[in-house]
Length: 155
Ligand code: T46
Image (cartoon, rainbow, N blue to C red):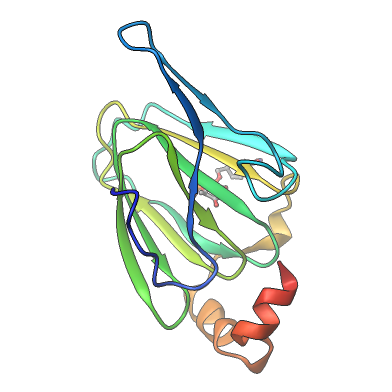
């Protein structure tokens, strides 16, 4: 992934972290809520041991949740779909995250053996915030309530 990558889908964008590069003694990455991350961080989770190269995760959208997703080791394919536009991003740069805003269908796949995914979220876990049915997502994403202006007001 290049820092100049342009995200064409709605409700997304690149979220770079501050980095202190100190090789060969290591790199230090910093994510401060409301500074590097564009919201107050209420939850952090990470996914590792992605041993099955055919695994597919995600396949849902969130109604209100704001998240930023990072690949802090290895690589994976992030597929985004805002209901109109789709975009595929090869995640392989630990310092560059991708915003997963509300009403953005996202799928993660093609994980490298050493892949570790880290996510910062704006709220605690809430199963009712998930839309796991793609047809329901498309209907909601293309409803008048989800025009770009209305979406902007929700975030
Ligand atoms: C997302 C993508 C990027 C919890 O109980 N609490 C949590 O905070 C999370 C994140 C998950 N769970 C439970 C819910 C399921 O029973 O863990 C189980 C696996 O979650 P899920 O199948 O949703 O995992 P992914 O990798 O498909 O999706 C996750 C996040 O759930 C989701 O919000 O946007 O990563």
